[in-house]
Image 1 (spheres, rainbow, N blue to C red):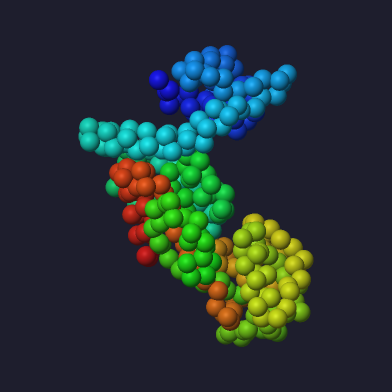
Image 2: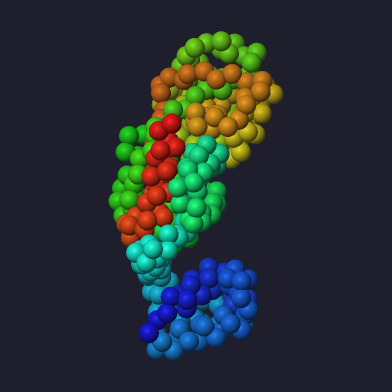
Length: 298
């Protein structure tokens, strides 16, 4: 019989490439990892790893087990949490991953409400942008992923295997220095910024910026690129260029030295919460999704 704890060890070994690195990640000893891998190979009835000196790689059987491990472990987590709720323990654990502007705006309100309503529920938070956050969900490394996509139904085919909880639509706004010629304009066409130096955000936002500018007939000259929204705002405020940022990113940062302007054509991104179908039935996960929806509605 294959045990879940052995599958977790196999995933760690496959991800890190060695018993010692897997032990560090799992918080146990190297001999314990080696012992559990031997037990798993005995249960499987075939070798799962090939050891060549200090290097280690999966056999074909090992690759099959790693591929199925995420779904198996997610199903087990769902079962454990549902049983705990039925037994009246009123406890739960949710691993949440979110992009930074969501972490600083939606997440704090949602988690505060969740703690007030369900004090026994523990939530951990890690920052990651999509598509990495979606990969983490599918790999079993989180239970809920706060993510976004641009355009109507953009990338919907990539989420067909997931439960998608729409939260809000976030419009991109222009950001220019206070002394800029368009600082007092209520609305500007993006083509009016064609000759400006640009500060770009995260890779996905950067790609969207280039697409929008090219559709307006120009390619933006990106002088600076950073995933740190406060850094983008600081660079604009210092007169180093212009930018477009999601309104959500502006909520938790004071744009010192910069002005926001409406940009046409309007570009919007859909903010959603994602989880796996099995996990959506877990009470703690369902409560987290509900609180994120309430936070987005305020």
